[in-house]
Amino acid sequence: MSEQTARRVPPSPTPDPSTLAFWDAAREGKLLIGRNTKTGKAHYPPRPICPFDDEGEVELVPASGRGTIYTYSVMRAKTPYVIAYVELAEGPRIMTNIVDCDFEALQVGQPVRLTFVDSEGGQPIPMFTPA
Image (cartoon, rainbow, N blue to C red; front, side):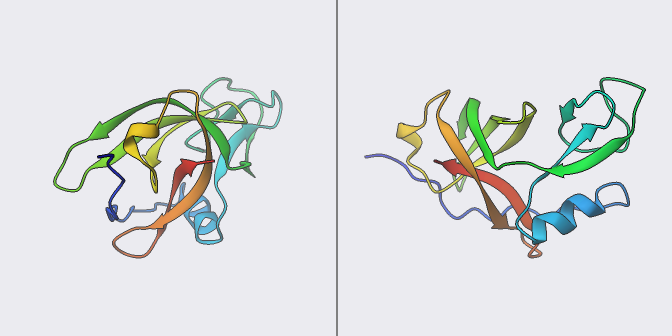
């Protein structure tokens, strides 16, 4: 019998001034990533200083919501769930959960798409589901 992700409710994030725009965008159904205005290099999580270069400013830009599973693991907790690194179409990798799926059908390289799951406090959390 194949296993499916249960409706695990993630804990609420604790936004700070540097992450507030990210969480506000998540409430609108958007995933933001950081991009260096000079080099164009994208990064996740978005932060005020580019992790690659000390030149240029960082701007927050919406991600397409498309990606592929880079690696994953099924966590066999009281409520099992899938934790994964997803490589976004824009390049950065994001640690996330894969939801609404058959655990047995997941594969490295599988296309996924963005979805949001409400946290304990109601803040939407970006996660992914098979495309």
